[in-house]
Length: 337
Image (cartoon, rainbow, N blue to C red; front, top):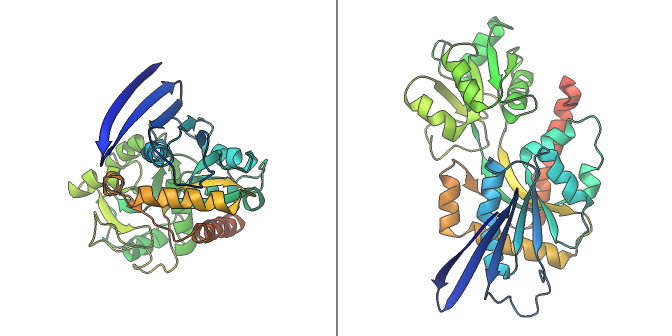
């Protein structure tokens, strides 16, 4: 167990932050911070459940958000890590008391995994209410240099002429790198073969050694290999170009209309929360997102901050995500359990 305090000044006010860690739980306490007059929420600590171990992408972003919310609200914000998979965060949020004091930290992969699961102890549409989106991140479609061509069309033409010859790597069954390439196979009419690895590091070893030839990888981890010429980047998988690879087209722009594989993080809660609480969470998180220091930290990982106008806008994004993977499941028969 460890605890320490940090003092700093902002304007004419002084704050004291105390970070207390016990196991996988992190509590951020903010003192001497007043809340807006007439605000009833929050008046006690808020728990954010992250369905992954400390140190992962979701956990890192959650820990960037928590102290800033504690600052804004003047109450403790607790991050609770559960190494039970992304779906766990969704389930915990859906089963929570609808008062806003237990909310879930949801990655897009949690929704795709839930949709592709045969049995769920909750209903994605009836039990969970999306509250606010935080970030969005695209991936890079990359190949090894020996694969002919430098465009998505080149890859499709080559893969079609050699069905079953090209192998693609993934970070595991059900990961974005797996489902994204199966979505690519479905839409392009190709038959590249899945080779799962235990994490991104081993995939890059497999690529550089020629064991696999294609991969959908995170922009940050792929960048060094692309810039060195050891791997080729063909396109960005999201709906817009990456700031780090501004000249690289999207898959959608490259002759595959409608292809969109974007990872994102957001906060979710149980259905039935009071509208005033939902509005308070959305407004408070939005203030966090527009702070320059937060945006800079997110950009360093190749992600973009997303400012949604309302919870309804995020609900529409989640609805489209669910619909996309429902269609994918019906077309491919792929399930995760």
